[in-house]
Image (cartoon, rainbow over all chains, first blue to last red; front, top):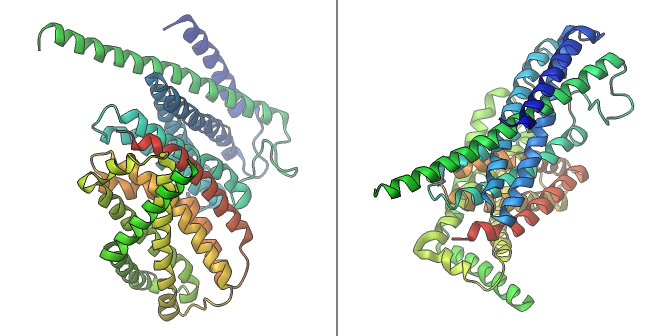
Length: 230
Length: 224
C-alpha cells in the first residue's frame, strides 16, 4: 500500500467518523419524520458515488475502445463493481426508510424503478464477461455494454422531473420549495457525501491494484509454465 | 463514399425484407405469439377487475416487447448461419450503416405486425383506436424504433457469450424499461384522443441517444 493510499485511508476514516457523529447525534431529528430521516444521509451518500462510478464506467469504456489499453477495462470494471455495491446500499436503505414513512417497503415509483433497472444493467455489465469465452473479445464487448448501460443514467436522473413521483424532491440543486433549512443537517449531509466519495476512491484504487496484480500473476504463471516446458 | 453508403444500406435493408417476405418465419411466429399473448394477458388480469379498454395499451406493448425480442433473436441468428456475418463485415462502409439498416428492417417488420395487431385490439379489448390515429401511429413507430435500436446492439453483445439465447432477453429487457414506460403512456394518451407530447419527447430523446450510440459502437462489436 503506497503512502498516498494510507493518507487517503486516514482522511476517509476521519471524515467517516465525523459524518457518523453529525448524522446520528448532532443533526436534529426531522420535524415530520423523526429519527427515521437520519438514514437519508447514508442513502444520498451512497447514490452519489454510485452515479459517479457509473459515469466512470462510461468514461473508462470509451477510453478503452479508443486506446485498446487493458488498464482502462480494469479501471472501469472495478468502478462498475463498486457502483453496484453502492447501488445495492441505496436499494436497501430506501425501503427501510419507506416502510415507516410511506407505509410500504416498495412503491412502483419512477425513481425506484429506474434505480432498480440501473442496478440490473450494471449487474450484467460486471457479470457478462464471465460468459464470454474468447478473452480478446471480453473487454471490447463489456465496454460497449458499459457505454449503453451508462447512457441510461441520465434517463434515471431525469425521471424525477419528468415522471410523476412520490420520491422526495432533490435537496441539492432542486426547486425553491425543496431543500434543507437546518445548518447541522446540511453539514451532516455534506460530510456523508464526502465520506462515501472518499470510500469510493479508496476502494477503487485498491481494486485496480488488485486487478493489475492478478493480471501480472497470470502472465508470470504463464511464463513460468513455458519455461518449465509445459 | 455517400454512394457506397446508400448502396450498402439499401442492399442490407432489401435483403432482410426479401428474406422475410420469402420465408415469413419471423413474422408468422411473432404475430401468432402476440395473439396468444393477448389471450393470456386477458385471462391473467381478468380477476383484477381492470377495464378491458384501459389494458389495451399495456397489452399491446407487452406483445411488441416479447415478440420483438423473439424476432430480433431470430433475425440475428439467420445472419450467423453460413458465415453471413463475415460477408456483411466486408461491406465497404462503416459498421454503423449496417446497424441502421438492421434497425430499419426490424422496425419495419415490427410496425407492420403492430398495424395488424390494432384490429385485434378492437376485437378483443373493445378499444377505440380512431380517436387520435396519427398520434397512435407516431407513438408506436417511435417506441418501436427505440426498441430495435437498443435490441440490435444488445443482440450482438450477447451473441458473443456462451448462453446467448438466455442472456439476450435478460440483458435487453432492463434496458427497455424507460422506452416501455414512455411508449405505454404515449399510446395510452393517444388512445384517449390526447396528444402525448411529453412522452413523445422522451421517446425522441431515447431514439437519438441510442441510435447515435449504436451507430458509433457497432463497428467495435463486428470486429473478429
